[in-house]
Length: 214
Length: 157
Image (cartoon, rainbow over all chains, first blue to last red; front, side, top):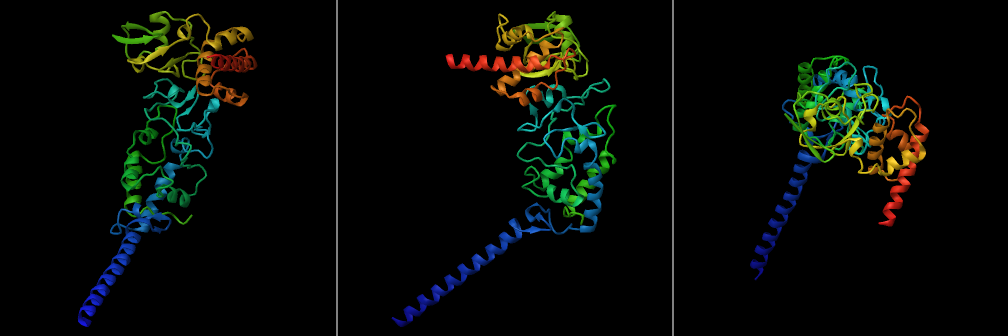
């Protein structure tokens, strides 16, 4: 009877130990894979530690930042609820508004004037089938952001339009992003070529998406 | 050949797909209520409804309208009795009148999406429609009146 009790006790102890180990390992697993934050960047957004290179990453982002702060990008990522316009980044004429979905309001929706393609006439609105601002519930503001703040914002899943790493990489290939380099005669392109921008963007993200100190 | 549906009527027009819609509406089909103002989407005189949205027909290529429903000022109502048309008449909004088909077509979208706009809503919604005669105060008054008429109409129903 006593021996039987000891076997039961041993069995219980083993089960308990295994359960505790499973719980500990699960916690470690979750911490590694999902929800922890490194340098303000959720780890589930990081592509992997193998290519992590903070120096190369920050250097690449400083090139990316020059493009993001150019009127071709910033005009549609304003701090307020009205798009900016032109190379000077003035408030868009007609007091156009963001609207709930970022596509304008009432009779002033983006696609009422901005056609699927560029117009040939000077001073006519440039075109793109996806013309819009970020939506009102996630404005993704570029205007007045430091390189540090903007890098963190873009790498933050809860602030970047819910984009994971793959979607962020794809975003640089988006037709509306590409349109920044093809807005017709009246608009200066961003300071880097599109190819150099994509290369810098990819390098920044693939080396860890690090943020500059300032 | 391009097929268009304008004011619930089908048209087949032999024009280049790149032709601005305004030219087709006015010159090919003959619906001249829609006006040419600036030609670069800056003034709003050429506004028509494309699937209900207030597009500027001077910069919209006709190929964009294929397979979609177009409404011009001529098709807004059967007897010129849309609340906005009645209000425009009651308030005597136009002076020269040139911009007002565009004004009304833009105001229709405003009232569809905001049935009782305040002054700020109206000013913001109508900021893309320019009136050289400066009838903005009367435009605002007429939109308020049309909104009241719409609300009363709904209450009756």
